[in-house]
Image (tube, rainbow, N blue to C red; front, side, top):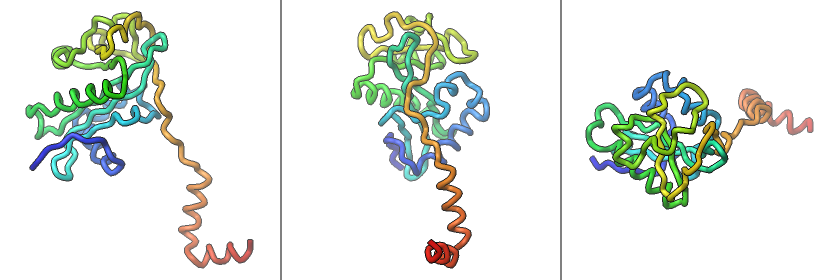
Length: 196
């Protein structure tokens, strides 16, 4: 079966979340990186999945952040691959695809919290992240950055902050009204329209 990396679709959300649960468990919600993703949408056009047939076997997403003094950048993560698909180079392929897409869209830098031994090969290092902080506990040596434009992380210091699009909040009144109409059925809707 052919594996492909593509943009994430709405229909991938449940499979992506199940994959992340399998890969990281509940601990993923306690990570400092999650504070930067909470109630936010990923950066426009920068959510990817790897699929084999209809099965989602990998995920990588990028998020809009400001690195300390307002410099715009992206946060990579989480990157996850289904357990039975690891050691096939899929994680690396997804990271490369995310970097390539971010560069094509004109972004200057990407930061992440991850294993230096793994991410160094993609050009990530702690060289320009030593004056940056995450919103919560983190391991300093694991806060890495990669410039795609020379100097994009020069002088980056302070707290990394989320700057991306807010996740839309559903209109509770509209949801309740819709649910009441469904429960009333066609007869209830007809009675209300005659009374109006």
